[in-house]
Length: 322
Image 1 (cartoon, one colour):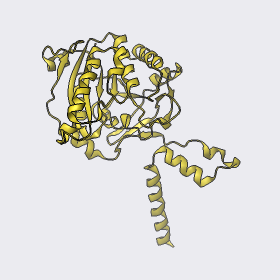
Image 2: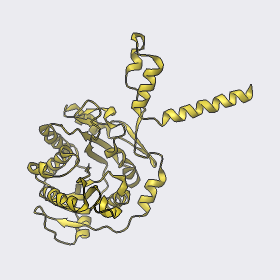
Image 3: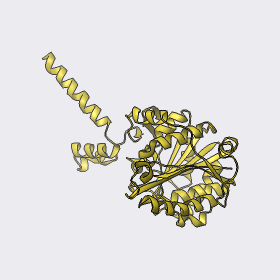
Image 4: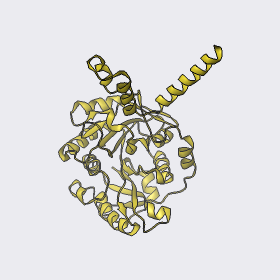
């Protein structure tokens, strides 16, 4: 009897561990499937969420730790609004007041992402990071979605800035929609880097569907500018997709011209995976009077992998100064 009880407990622990590893939408389906969907089971039809969101590879400490250990000195180009390179780039980054930036969410270049965050952490110490990104899978009901949950990472939890999230939500321009963030790597891939390099920072994740209203993106940026004097605003973006390395470079030159001009009116000229997120970023930059763009890293997966003729994704990681 004792042996049977021990086996049952082990089996139950295994089931609980498996359930804990499932994303929220899977648990919702399991609950609905287990308890039925008839009138007596209305509660089972409601979405069932864990009390936190998962980062990408939430249990893979080595993936992120190794990326952070392998970083070395980066190359920075300081560009003015016309795109011209000027000044001592590293000194420019160290001296300036950094308010915003762009960073890749493609973990294929996780070493570059780690390097970006480590460099950033030497210059700024934000209390809050507002992270803008694409809603890749168009999940959820809101064109512009917020998450108010903690994010589990290999280095611990990233806490939300619930006050900022509440104040944004009250405007009606974005709504808390946890379903939208399930398996969303524009946020999940970066949460561990944020926890590792800015352990005290609170997070405000905002993701945009492709059809998000342009006027609402601009108004949201104005709200963020009014709330975020101590916040760092980052756009989680990847750029040219599915081109060869040489073709991606041509598209990136167009995107860099838009980025360095900081002109909202030119967003449609950029080759980027979320024009609404980019629009919100550039509108924020206009509202705070940003002056220059520091391009920290620019490459593509074709160059990194030495497959120059294969379809690739490009990366432009930058810092924007006020």
